[in-house]
Length: 400
Image (cartoon, rainbow, N blue to C red; front, top):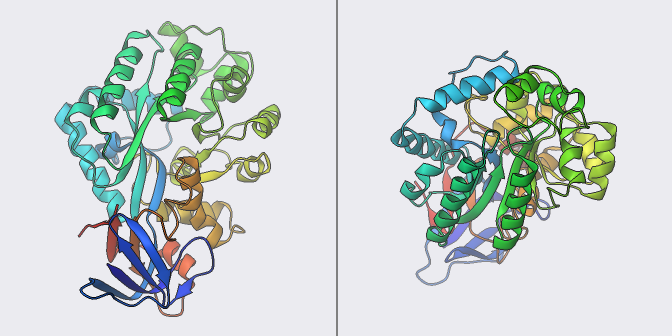
């Protein structure tokens, strides 16, 4: 198959005008202006379009797609968590499966071809169909009350990953957060992830309440977890991030969402163990968090990608909207550098550098084409776009 767009964004060099892209099987096998169709080769002309690698969303909760508008913004984070848990208790397996399917469609409509999904309902795993997108299923693990549910989730996860071995994407484990997952659980998840080649994803330093709990041993979140019987010996002993890094519970492949509230010593620890970080700008704005410490994280050596989080704290699953929000936070970051935060950077974070997030020979054929307004900067055009893709391909297969 030969694709002929107006502009190609390879993400490894400047935009290419008039270049064609050849796809054979599930790989890109050629990029350049000199490519011409072979005998009998399918040709897809994409005039007035920019072709780019499919966008990569490194933090999403597809389970919560049905929660759009269910929780009004402005609540304290701990109260928001209680509302989420109450909503979850009212849903069936069929509800979860329908939410995931709807979430996939919303991602596709926005040009996303890869997602790291935090799966909070492991009972649904055996019923999941093959996904339309390249998906890393990171099974959520919690042991705030007891180890039983976490053990069960791990067993279900490993069985599911064996069954889904041929699916595009991969598997992962997600000890939820320092306030819901114990040192024992983080250590076990990290060891299993390292042994099995799984992604490890977690939430850290997301809210003021979490900061108060770990730094000072007080606040609404501290009181809630103390009342349900969590061991609180790790509180009042330093930040949530330092607690994890000093105990060796994260490594340089651990994908960490948020890191909104950090201490000066956290940045020194990150210089020794730079973590892959996901920032979710619209979720960040929903909660009214303090300004995201992008510059400090980059200075510490962390690569930062973008995610959407869920429709429980967002009103869309569109990475382009996240890019626009990020540029409001950081207008001096160029459009090209911003686009790398949803292409090349997340590809590195999930261990797929050179295969995802780029259009080069040998890369996986995950491609999207968006309308390109006349004489516009193609990077800026992608960020400003609100249109559905004109062309959408995952693993060499076209989707209408």
